[in-house]
Length: 188
Image (cartoon, rainbow, N blue to C red; front, side):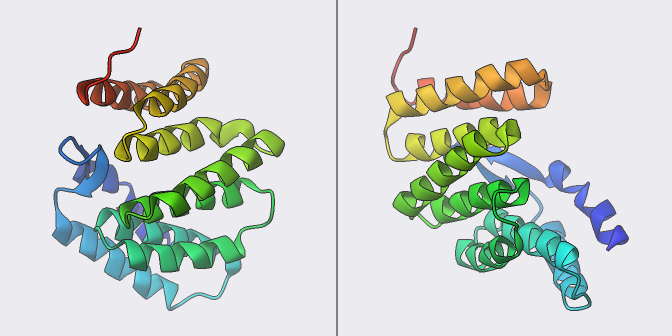
C-alpha cells in the first residue's frame, strides 16, 4: 500500500486538462496509467481493511475515469460510497468523484444530482470541499451549454479558493473561467 501511495504521486505528471474536451482530465501516458491501475487492483485483492478499501476504490474510480472508462469508474466509486460514513468528508469527496464519473459517461443529469447532494452535504457538515463541489458542477454545466450558471459556479469556487490561498486551485478555476469565456459568452 505504501508503495502504491508513492507511485500515485507521479499521477500529476501524466494528467492534463484537455482543452479540446471541456477541460476533462486525460492521461498523456496511458501505459503508466494502466500500470497504476494494475498495481491498485493487486493491492485491492490483498486487503480487507475498510479504510484501505475506501482509498483503493476511490483511487481506482478516479484512475478509470481518467482512462475514459467511466462505467468501471462508477462501479468502484459506488463501492467507495458504500464504505464512506454518512455526513463525512469521505462521503462528500465520493459524491463529487461519482458526479465526475457520471459526467464522463455523458449522464449529466445524474452528475448534477450528485453535485447538488455534495453541495448540500458541504453546507450541512463539511465546508472544506465546497469549492470542489462548485468547480465540478460548473464544469458539468459548461458541458451542457448552461454557461451563465457555469460562470456562477466557477465564481463561487474562485472566491473560496482565493480565501484558501492555494495557487494551484485558484489557477484551475481561472483556467475553467477562461475556457468558458472562449466558448462564446462574455462576462463582466
